[in-house]
Amino acid sequence: MSPDADIRPWLYLTRGSLEKDAALTRRIEEALQNGSWKQLSEILAEKEGDKKKQILRIASAKGRVG
Image (cartoon, rainbow, N blue to C red; front, top):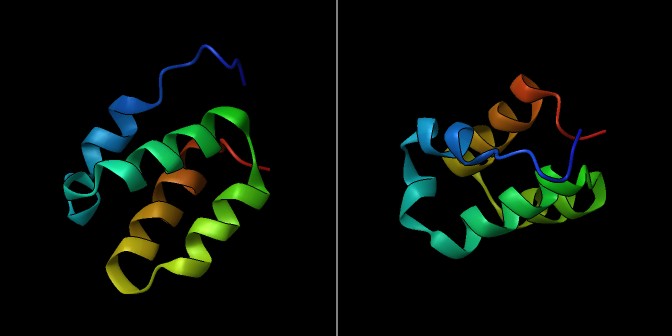
């Protein structure tokens, strides 16, 4: 994945509880752009329920981390 790739459209499409948390959205965007599983797993460890499901859905659907 190119570091210049814009993943914001995928984050925008979630339109759930993530969009209300700008800091979290930026952290997820950074982890996905960098392909950093460690950073994403740290974010996931902090979250529960709906937010965790949304983050996993974004990451797995786009194959951005790994």
